[in-house]
Image 1 (cartoon, rainbow, N blue to C red):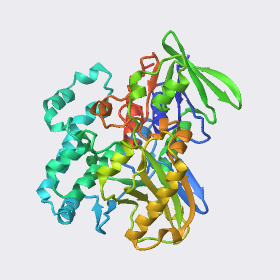
Image 2: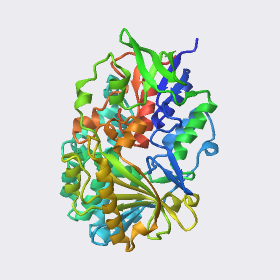
Image 3: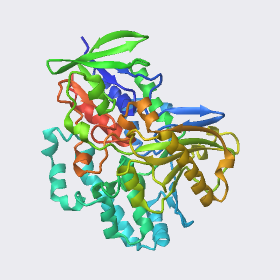
Image 4: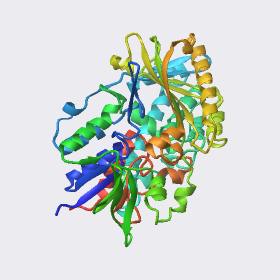
Length: 492
């Protein structure tokens, strides 16, 4: 009989893993408690506006395309995208702004002028970013760190030989201050720590490899919006025989003799038991242990690990257009260190936040009515620890409106015609991400950055994939996580 695999959760990693296991010969069933697939990558439609609810940055499209290539399917039938000419438009409190071009050579030239930094210094930084990525990706991003075979390779030996160049034990901020003198440029590159929900004043300087993903590999926009990434994989999975059970919460993973044997689920109010040879959890690791493995003690390390940052997001329908804004826009705070201290030490929203504004209607006009824009407005937030979010949300809304109005020269509140708000409580409720942390654990500790939950559990036939497992959160790493996990699952 054909062996069976169950994937818990239809987030992007769960979808990708289901495809890889189906290709491996398993009969795959994906179980999702929500009525939709895609996890955080969901969509909201309101009053003629369309909003992508989750991730808004798309890099490394080849990782998506590789899943279609597995089944020899033409990707453009399912999914299309375009490369962006501008990475992001950055704004500072003093009124200055920098529109970052996507071409590295052009970026170096324009950044040298704007930041008053020699082009040679900028080129060296980008080259080192690419070098760090080349050294670490084959080990930390493409392999399981809990598989001994990972350590017996030429890639590992090369990385060990160049260990000093990886800057493992210096903070990202300290690393940048040793290279640059311009405070705005330091803040510019410190921002990349937020890509895994961490603080640049704590996370390892090895994270300076992240700019390589944007500035050498490029940023892209799916022609049908970010939601289309997950939906294209969902369509592909159905076409190749993956079975989906939606609105079917998993009650527990059944374990016998330290081996996963299947799951108990609720379908139409009735409990069912599904047997499986392999169980993969795309759910948050903490949630999996605490809720789905009631007879298994949650490892102390998982309980004690610091959560990554969360987010507070305002989805605003804006009844006008702003030609000065791009698809991606960043409005920096005046004091970056205080901002992250408030988030990670005081566990509250920053008094002066860095604001991210994504406007997909710039690239997909149908996302908003004519002469209008759909704004995805996000600030970094602490994980939910029982804060008074209703009070915090109103205060932050007022702060954001005042800050954006001052920089853009108009009263933003006059143009907000519809609104939805997503806070850490809502994120936890819809995705089971513990405390609403967007990336599982933070990478503020170097050990946490590289020793995340293994893709293979200590329970036989139980595996993990997704943002809370190795190698981390974000679309590219979730897709890498799915591949690592599928490769660890025994072949049929």
